[in-house]
Image (cartoon, rainbow, N blue to C red; front, side, top):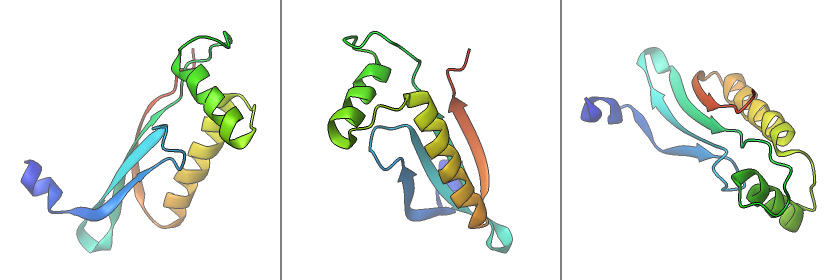
Length: 105
């Protein structure tokens, strides 16, 4: 099955969030009639307000403060950036399969 699927994968068309932190990754596949289907996985870190904790949320928060001087809530940032990226792919005519760990309780 893997060989059958990979023959339709668009070579070099793996995308991830531009920060490299792994908030989302994707892989695009060609289909009949020139259709492209993109499988996307996303991860929205759990909110954690303990600034000195070792959680993913706080590690990524420190990254954005250090590199972009950005203190926006990571969950807000994820939603904004992820939705923007999904819209970009849809505007390009791609069909999307989205799997997400949204951590919204």
